[in-house]
Image 1 (spheres, one colour):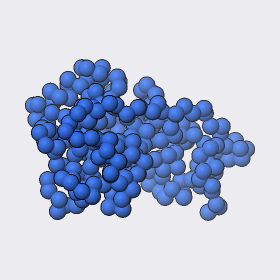
Image 2: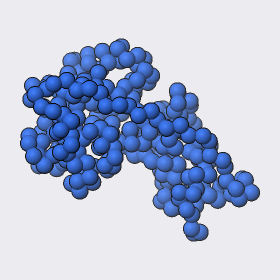
Image 3: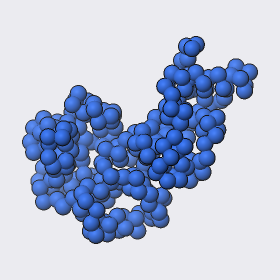
Length: 264
């Protein structure tokens, strides 16, 4: 197989062109393209989400995402090397060897850190002591940069020692405390709540939600994974689904203006 420069290929061929190449049945929803995943064949008719402005996709059914090359690899169930070769060959054949011209990109707006309420400790100082690049976090499949965005990382001291410390905010972006997320099966429970916090009263990721369709997933790490692959408006419950947690969800939707929710 001829050598393909991945970086150069991605500058020529945008993800929308790859969507058309693959014949995916996706519909425009706001700034995203959504539809069923023909590979997974589960998750309903909105499991696959493509964000053209960031050249990223995320499949809620497979809990996987990436760039346009990764999309082709996922849909065709082949390696990324094979996918890059097929993309390159396809567009060279169609365009006399020139490929397509990449559309203009606009960066996703950066959400400034919200001001934190006083919770008996300094959340900014706590975040500065966390290690987002600790090797123990690598099996989670989330990049250190994403942990940094969520002001989270490996905790080496305190109640969350040996766990992933995930910042938990209320709807307004005020820090409620830090969750302790287990890194091994031996660490129980899976999520440790901050003192005085009822997990059923909160949705992870709620402060980032904007008007529009909402995705509900079953684990906080899926919120981070979706964000990493260009999909926002994703929240997760932190405990068993109860009447109170459903009230919390519907209240968030009413307050922000989310008319629909998709459960994955």
